[in-house]
Structures are given as C-alpha cells and as structure tokens.
Amino acid sequence: MKMWTHYLIGKMFLLISDHIVLQHLFDQPNLNGKKAQWLATISEFDFEIRYIKGKENRVENSFSRKIQVNHKL
Image (cartoon, rainbow, N blue to C red; front, side, top):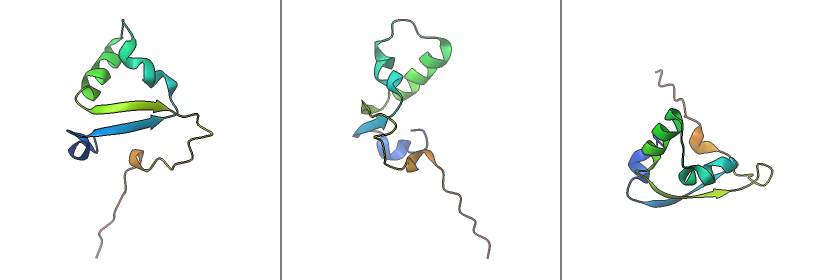
C-alpha cells in the first residue's frame, strides 16, 4: 500500500487477501507494537478487506511485486 499511496489515498478500494487475520485486525483489543504501528499506517486509507482462500484467489498478485526496469542504452 505504501508503494501505491498516491493512487489509493482518497479513494475507496477493496483489498482481497488470502490472510484471514487481516479481517480481524481492526477488532483486536490488544495489539503488540508492530501490529499497532501497521494499523496506524493503514488507517489513513479507505478500504474494505475481503478474504478469499488461497486456492480460490487465482488473480496474480502484481501489486506486491515491484517492476525492475533497466534503462541501459
């Protein structure tokens, strides 16, 4: 989400994940430091989390991969 912040800020989007714990992240009463920091970071975005089992999630996860372009002339 950090990489795509300029596209996502101010827009509602759907976050589809095969990590079921993400659905309950906002409901947890006690968070450790790392989870609390991550929650503070993602709270600035307007999104909905939808869980899809890994086998059913056939969409290639292209947003999590950075494209390396080599501009040698």
